[in-house]
Image 1 (tube, rainbow, N blue to C red):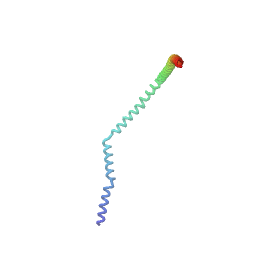
Image 2: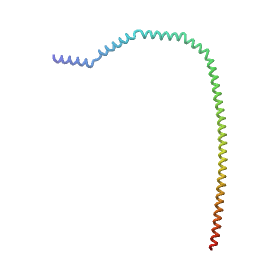
Image 3: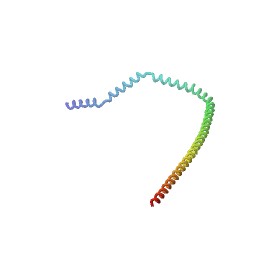
Image 4: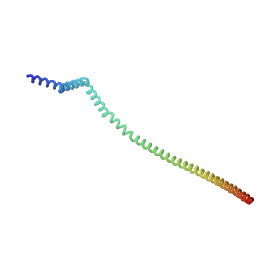
Length: 157
């Protein structure tokens, strides 16, 4: 008898600790009930509004939109073509101006280069003539010194 009581107590403790099915089912049922009570008919009203909007759009707005598109697509296409032509002209004009500008810049740089080279030639000629004058002056100076040296050595001998 005592084994039965112990066994019964152990199974009761086990079911309380590890069997949560009843508690979960009760919580789930209360959540669903509360959700349904709070929401009520709002979803039905919301769905009916959406249905009205969709049918109104399908029956009234869509045909009106299609008609206005058919009327205005040709005008829009013409406008786009005109705009495209204007854009192409602007691009061509800018390329022409760019090539003209590049050509003028090239001429300007070429002229500056020629002026620079002419200045370098002039400076080089001036340096060469200064160098030649210095060499000649030094040659004359050493020639005079050598002559004086020969005169002074001939007097001594």
